[in-house]
Length: 568
Ligand code: ADP
Image (cartoon, rainbow, N blue to C red; front, side, top):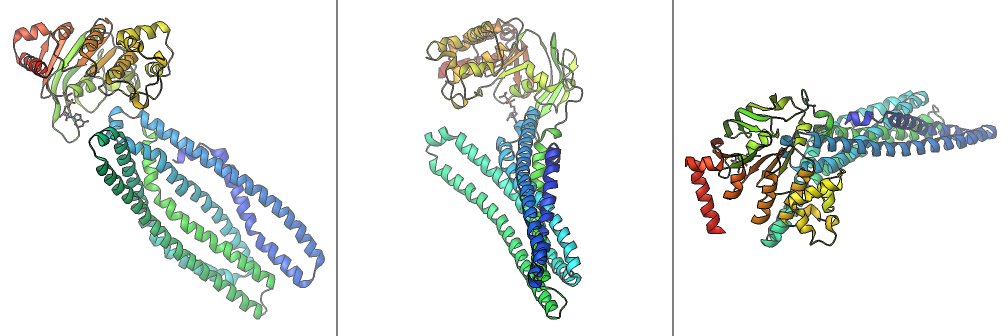
């Protein structure tokens, strides 16, 4: 956060300078008033003319610096907001995949929208106001002491009282602001959940439930905000009452000094004017300081997501894959859970094709995620061509692997863009990817071909079409490792067969397919079938070897085939 402000040093300096100049000049009006009233009461025309001329120059300068300040402060807020959003956005994308998925995306959305707005309203603007008011206070104090030390002492006495009472609110406000931030985050999360669940909500008649949930969250968010505002209201009204009391004290004492002949009428007007300029800033500082204190939890949240928190990889070696991807005594469990992967040792060779099979929940996806560098808190070791994965550049490692899940994310653009993703590829490369993935088949039936829009998250396409696009996305980049995580499940058997058999023919590609499809012809094309049970590799070999062996895989294979036959 502070770094984001520091990035705009020049603008910040101009803003601060103009702020100091305008604030200080604003106070000098009291002296002009004093002089003009005294000149009027004395009937001094010459002095009157001089003061009039001075006032015109004063007003012009004040207006000019005021304008520069206003423009610069707004530009500063715009720049800091842009920088902060950029840092948070980059920070979110530079996180490890594991950390990214451990946080609800609504939290990121909230940090990028609500929290940054909160920082603008409760940190940047209050900070500028505090500075202005400190200047106004200091200059006012100087002139007050010059005009009447007695009134100054009384004013300071009132001020101590004004400080003592509302400072009690500071801690409570801090707590309330933190609650507002987390409640807004919960509100955004719930809203996102409801909107994403549109189809389920409408088709399962969950409208009332959705409304009820929304109503609860809406009230809760507004309620927490109101509780914080209520405390602000108390803080403000106590401060205001004390301020008025102070001004009354000044008027009565100054009037008494005039009666006793110790003060001129001009000085009384100047004192009244200054006491406002003296109390007002303290009031503003007192209103703004709790805001600045209260924003600390939000600031910490922003800093947590910002890019500077994300350290680069320890060594950042460039990954190369010419021979093997090897795991030794691999052990892994999710946070506070039993081991999901138990003592797995495995060697995958470049260019070979592996089918990972086993009952649901036995750890297939987890094993693949570990092998491709998704998680790095594991026991044992994983090495790519003999180099420990933990020593490799995480970003480059991620770029070597393409994973195709059941749910493929689509950008709200056309098919071509969803395959190329802002990169340039030759028409020939595109054509090869379209054929291998089987996209060319359905393109024939779309009027705009590659330029057909896919809709928000690909809703205008079928699940199978989305998966074919995902396959093309991976193929066009020639990634050495491709993971199909139930990747072709949404495609009809015939197309799935076609795509998978084409992938199986790509010599350079190392293919890991997590599958439930016990198609004998397809499984027979894999070099190795890795059969897992309860986080362990139970058996491994070619389909022929495993079937001949007649072990646990064969039992699983027969059962799945029977089930598929019964349901198909
Ligand atoms: P499979 O791919 O064989 O169906 P997974 O690797 O997805 O199995 O899951 C293995 C086990 O780990 C399951 O018990 C599952 O509930 C658990 N699991 C998977 N992902 C997570 C996660 N992100 N957090 C906690 N537990 C998880």
